[in-house]
Length: 289
Image (cartoon, rainbow, N blue to C red; front, side):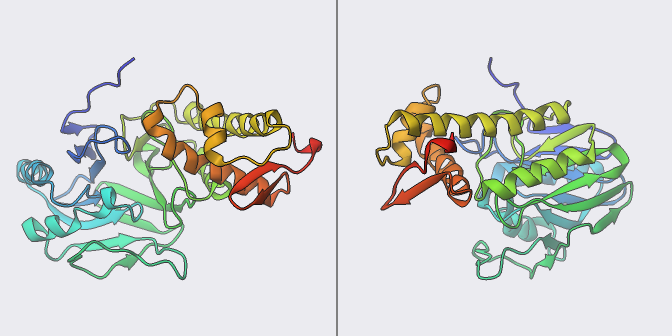
């Protein structure tokens, strides 16, 4: 069944307006969701879409004008270009003095800020609360998709802006599977009534969706182990595994699937359930299954 069409602008509640980033793609779905949060004359924008998307900037300008509000803060859920790329354009258009907040990446990782990024970042801290009129946002550090990823608990609505940890449709990619699974469990513990994802439509059954994600990853791991067993102790590549385990997935998504398989394999390697040699993998022993 086709996903429901997401309007360019949606008033989701008395304190949340969603603006679609107008940057559709294989990985962004209908586009990046950005959220204007609060009820006062100054509000918070969560994520900013991609750079050089005039259509998005025009919609944001119209919403700020119609609501008679200005931006006081921009919160970035993580460093990917489709979430922070629009900051420069927003500054140039209507928010030159706006504070930009983001959790730092790991020591040794570069922030990889977009060209012309207009402001030094204010570092977010796990557990920190950010206030604006009508809204309290609690920062929850959720590494895995990226090392700097955060979600934001909107306390007044028992809602979570979940960035790319959880999508409105399909599943997401990640850098570290171990950390990602821990982060999913952190979000589950919030007991949110609704999730506002970075891509796709709102999620009205958060616990059910998170449990599906956890079960999906467990199912993938079991598939990978079974595929490895089917090769009778031969060393195989991650793409060999993808072709067997992701038969229901369109082939143009195989590169993304290969990334996920490699993360599963790295997790299994840490658990000493597989061995690795020159880019190829096999089971460590029969008990690995």
